[in-house]
Image (cartoon, rainbow, N blue to C red; front, side):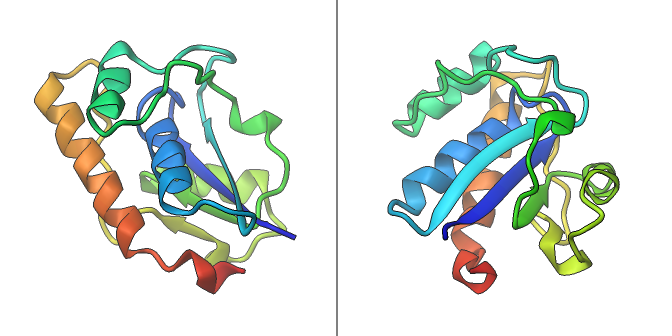
Amino acid sequence: MPTNVLFLCTGNICRSPFAEIVARSLHDGDSFVFSSAGTHAIKSHPATDTMQEVASDHNLDLSRHMATPLSECELPDVVFGMEQHHLIAARRQFPELDASQIRLLDHPNAVVDPYGLDLETYRRTAAQVLEALQDIDLESFT
């Protein structure tokens, strides 16, 4: 069975969808299933144009992304939140998971929400997400 990994942010239109497609690009194969959601996501909203542009700069495509509310997610094996309040929401949504299964993506740092900010802020956020995902040993969750 593949390990189900959920990336969680607020609107599911910037940070978590970027983390999802980066994780897919780093971990191909049958070992993992990646998804993303937002604690306050409006269902089916696309990724922001700026995050789509930043993803494209990394040869990744977010054009088909549609936001998913956390409340509509099935139980994952592990959740990576962008900020502390995302971890709190995940613990409420998935009480079956223990503390080791709900973590900050870039522990101990929050991943800054770039929504509504300039392109450089989006690029810094993307770089932080990419570096964090390169440092995480996802095999330890299988």
